[in-house]
Length: 284
Ligand SMILES: *[C@@H]1O[C@H](CO)[C@@H](O)[C@H](O)[C@H]1NC(C)=O
Ligand SMILES: *[C@@H]1O[C@H](CO)[C@@H](O)[C@H](O)[C@H]1NC(C)=O
Ligand SMILES: *[C@@H]1O[C@H](CO)[C@@H](O)[C@H](O)[C@H]1NC(C)=O
Image: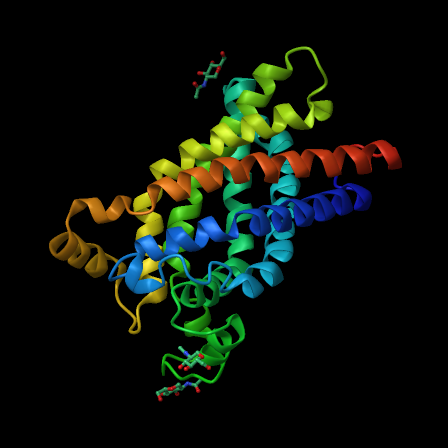
């Protein structure tokens, strides 16, 4: 049963978590984008203007994180009840893992409605193709690329989801599992924010490192002037720049996501525990 107050807890906690993380790690994210861009780090700005593109990240982070958590928490409640009926022979722990994976995947798909356009605008500004997020946005809105507004805003949508789903399928069950094994006989809803943060950090770092090649493909698709098929792009990259290109930016990516995971989930648990404690409601 999804109550409206539990819904508000997910919404506010998710928004607070997303915004804090994006603000704290923006410069590292910029370095990562430039390492992955065609031509390499220095041709795409080096250490100059590390906060270019911050505007689009700030505007998008609260709505996309809220969308994620609303969907995640709602699906989790639903599947927790539904999966044991569908698969009576599944053990409770496997059924929970499966429920976390499915729920997080739906969460990512919803979050991508906001995240994909914001990423395109942000990454083009980070790699100094534009002077500001606003100019980068106008370029798409005025159809200057000639690909149409909708297609322009959702370029790389498929690849982003191809990156997010494996990421989340690794991260969330790992996170919930670490949390559960650490909480032992404590109430899982009242796990300390620091424990939540450490679990989030480990889970995020592992997932980030493994999914780096998909992240490189996504960055290149979004930065490219012309539309290009993702398989053709992967083949070209391999031929022209070799295997190692698929792991460019792995250092900053792993670092910011594991540190970011700590802040994201730490803030999420703190804010939601606070709201739950002060309003006498149950978490989803
Ligand atoms: C599920 O468990 C029941 C009872 O233990 C068994 O009879 C049945 O064959 C199992 N079904 C599957 C699909 O394994
Ligand atoms: C950014 O602004 C500078 C100075 O106003 C201008 O010379 C340059 O062409 C602009 N760059 C882009 C990509 O619009
Ligand atoms: C965008 O520009 C292209 C090429 O100029 C044109 O074919 C297309 O119809 C335009 N799309 C929109 C939505 O204006």
